[in-house]
Image 1: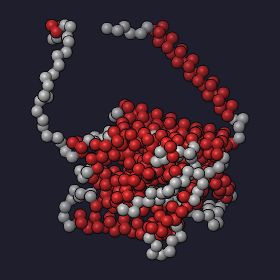
Image 2: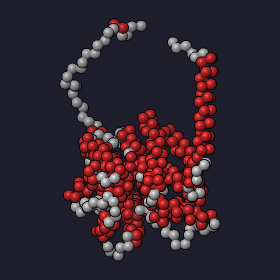
Image 3: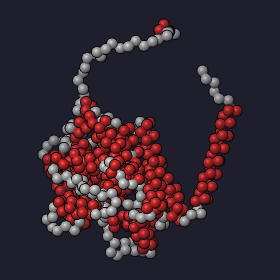
Image 4: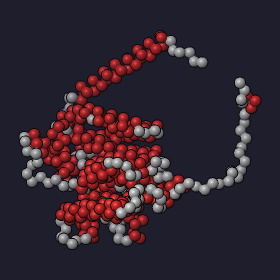
Length: 462
């Protein structure tokens, strides 16, 4: 029996802990004092980082309290650290390496909107509230409280993106209680694209949040849990004000999943309730479609082909990593389109350091899909078909739409909107578990090996 530690040893340990805390506090104060020599862009970012500590701790406590897997808890905490590193890297690339990008526009316009709000004007006259205009207004609202700090804005948007990833994980956990949660958590939290692109002032972080809200709402809906409608409404509305064409994909995928949801209650009320839900989805679809037509400036009656044609023309004309878009037009084109959207550029197609990083990530994902190709059979109809149908429908529609993108740089940034859906296929339960209990099998063919026991007689002694 181990002897209890002596009073002297406890005092020594306490003194060491206090000394470490004192040293850490001094280093912290010195670092903060050193930061204050820079402009408010950096100083404000440090202030925002401190303001985000409290909601971050609350988020982590809520997540970790309901997570029983210790390794997943580690992944979530480490994922936050990776997200912070990705944010700093994204900030450095945008403002220190390239010196340009959409974040510059959001920062400049957001600063003006913040000044207008402080002077009593809620929204400047002529300011749009859809697409780019919404991100400008939201950035202005953030700057109203934090001041015009680009680093602080990056941290706020990155935090929203991290919240979206947490919602994706919770959705997977609800939809697949016996799924490979470790693998899914590792993929969405540590994938370089998810840590880098949705970590700046821009649409990617906002879309990661709203897509995560929608996925979480769908998971609760198909699992017949309460409060699914508020999450769905917030996710669909939030995505519609930034990228309504993505919202159309979400609504269609949700409609496919909704058709497969069974009803606990029988009687005449169930068909009417499902019909009312489908009519609501059709109404939302028509409203979002009109918004897409107005955004792309399409004439009434114009079809999807016109949107694809505009997309091909706009993306392929941009300088840099342009290529000939695949453009899926039939089911036979889907394999090539999926390969192009999810895994390209290939290493020999990369024309820059950023392109090379995207190609290496694509090669890693391709390797994982080839290695675990048997899990793709789990997408067959099963008792979890509603959420799988939602994931599959959204992924296919996304591939069809973005296969018309003819620029690797834009494609690498945009596909973070589909990765959390596609990666579900690598972590769903195996076929035997997904389709029901496996039949009983006979005893092993080979007799078990004898293990060497140096003292067999000692068993049971005493």
